[in-house]
Length: 113
Image 1: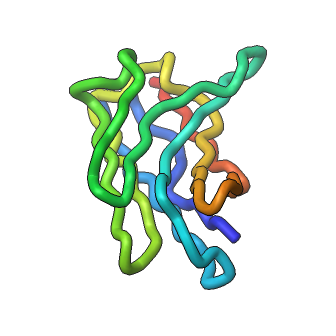
Image 2: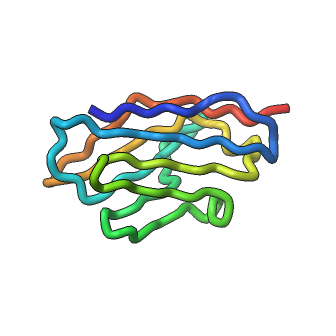
């Protein structure tokens, strides 16, 4: 129901853009966002946005990442700049609406020289 894309391998200091779209079966969305999970670590919040544009970022990505939501298209993107090796993780898209969490399948982001 959520399809994410845009991951890949990038050198430190580089940029990547992740995109995620919700299928038509998800009728009501209030919040969309991105989470990530590095090997051996718990899944953590990266950034979220409400449909009104209220955003929240993890301290570790503030000033480097930017989240944008398109309510009409039910999509969310994450522009990641100045990437660091510690940003390496599987990134998951999440949507919330009507008391239900929806998760995407995850996309790998690897930051390495």
